[in-house]
Image 1 (tube, rainbow, N blue to C red):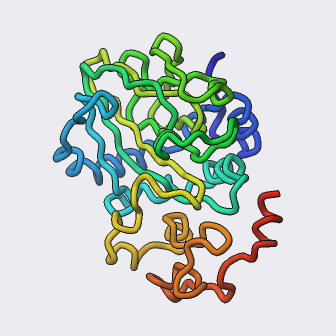
Image 2 (image 1 turned 30 degrees about the vertical axis):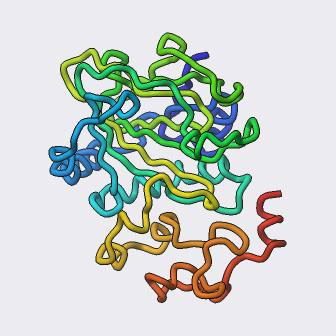
Length: 284
């Protein structure tokens, strides 16, 4: 099964239709080149200091840097991209809320071996979630060219419907080749992995993952973003980071108050948290 590519003006409904069918889809040229340059400039000092991975999964020739909310203001519109969030709302609609799960710049260097093929939701202690139940929704934005020879993310379209804990090799996968500014979207149950870099240049991608709000975040947003940054962030991004109720009676502050009141009381809503009936209606 081939990877389907959509234009940047594709509706969230159309994108989700393909995502639901294949487990992955690429939207071409959703991010402009100037935004890419700004993000790269903001993250360059952190990338220069990053160490290479220490195991096969992280990649012995791969550098990873997170904390984009704190380090890259120009990444905030990417995290809150309306098309992506429109798809996320549909992909994670079986829960009452979702949250920002992980942000990273990933640079796969020349000579990097292929990453083991995996599912992102194995991060939850390899818990055997029911078939068809996704805990995360992922985006991989191309910051540089993504080509088969330089380590483009490898995916197995349709594998989100397969059994859990299967073993695959790179030959079983397809490369998600993209120009800078394009984005690969995929479900938490899709089998995938970083490719082998046989070129002489780094392959750079921006990861933004979202997860069900009742699960622990992969990247702890509460300690990744210092208070002086929190004081300047807009309400919608703060709530996406996790300063919002995770579900009925989950994640509240001070005996049922809106959790955002802990850091930005001016954004607190009158209602405390959703009632159980409201949650049931939302996810039914």
